[in-house]
Figure (cartoon, helix red, strand yellow):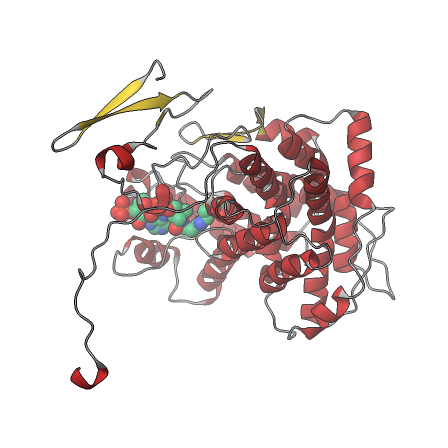
Length: 430
Ligand code: CMC
């Protein structure tokens, strides 16, 4: 029995539960014995009130708009670290020292190449294939080269899986893009850093090497860091859920990509651009009409890039990206009419009672598409970029879940509201 308990009064009995203490944040009522002892289950669609695990990876204070990776504030991390450094931090729980970082970078860098047989896999997709579909399929496909059909149990195997996925994901992403535009695949060049290599494979051609702009490298590095983890979001919960059946890391991560692709999650970054573009192009889609549609309960349209399950304040990632988008455009001496529309839309929403009362603020996806565009990425690649960023987070959660003695196969209960037992009716009698 912990020193804190909660008592739940049920019709004929009461249930005493331990209260689990966090290092910071919500306390948790431990209801593991609720159903065995009382026959009751809890009802929590979307698991909005349910902690799926004890985790020490990422902490969000939604009211304060604070986001910590392993205790380090996201803004400080984004300003000072490289993406691979953050990946190490998330996976292993500590900032690497100079030697550890150099060895991790060298390890990742020497595994960026795909098995040559993967080329035929990319070739087989139709050119119009969405890069997210190719990315998730290729994540499964590379697992076929490693015999990882079972969950690895040795630490070395787990580390190798993590390194393989992180090393190869930019190559897979860039090849998915090259496929979609009908250009030859570019091989990785390990002289480059992680982010440089990705840009090289995306934008160079065998006939013409595109110089890599350090400012774009810096911007993409920050963007990937800002996407690197976000505790029990939908895709991470999916990775944990699939992994809880002892499925291997590759299968779990590929499933997470499916969850990320949805427009209410990582797919929101391209949905935001579609929404802003419609306001720009379609005289009937004004700022006012867009907000009215978002407020209309008979219309399933939502203000894309707005709202969050955890933040009831400005998403700190959105704040950083919004400033960054302007800086990038200024530096390139460019402008994007969609940025102006986004700012107007944000200002109008933040003054509208509907959004104020519900504490709906811009989230990470509201401005990220604008900056991805400014960096030269097409809209269909936005969620792929999110995936590359989120990958270390997914893997860190997969690893943590596998080590956690509390982990059980994810298998929720239901409240059955269908027909009770009734006799089968033969076909001729129906
Ligand atoms: N536009 C209009 N109304 C909204 C929006 C929105 N974007 N977001 C929430 N609401 C309303 C919602 O209809 C509900 O109203 P009511 O209380 O009258 O029923 C209230 O605000 C509470 O919202 P909810 O739907 O209960 O919130 P949720 O935690 O279930 O959903 C969300 C969170 C992010 C899915 C939702 O805010 C949303 O659909 N946003 C738009 C899509 C988006 O930008 N997704 C990216 C999320 S952040 C990054 C990521 O996860 O990838």
